[in-house]
Length: 111
Length: 119
Image 1: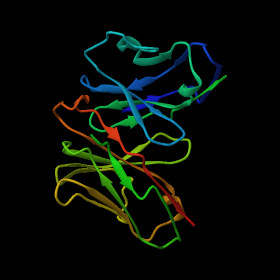
Image 2: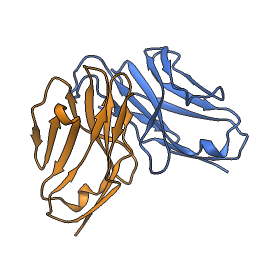
Image 3: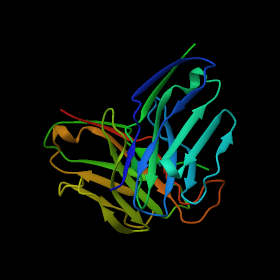
């Protein structure tokens, strides 16, 4: 079975705090991709990152970083020094053939 | 360089009516996907085209739903005899196998969605 679990439904932080969004996935495929998308209130899904199953290197892009651990089937996303503009719903997704999304984590960053 | 576009952005209809949505993918993308998203949930896959061929359909795509991509460019999603349970955001995405244009290959880029409300 293919599944993505985002256990945190909602997170609220104050601006400049660091925040980590958790993602756990299940798949029997040995080759797959993992994604994070951001969905601001406007509704459009914005691509953030893709990771393939053979690349466990962590990645940093500005204030964003991603921690991929195959041993625990997790692909967590950290925002450092959060800003109000980071407020959105964040989705983790698994791609063995078509995207399978988690239920999303709603992040609210308060000034 | 434009992204994925969808039309209309919002649609309100009465139960039993037919509706049609359009998606224009990123121009060099040969793959096109439709998803449905209900409130508080992640998007769920409906169907997928490679060029004009519809290669996969989800069980969610009942026989009231039909999608086409006649010339391998834009796509339409039609819902016949709409029901209140069809109320959702319908999202279109496109991707290409190769890379280019500064985008990541085999990555789906989404349009703004069509929000459907069935009364």
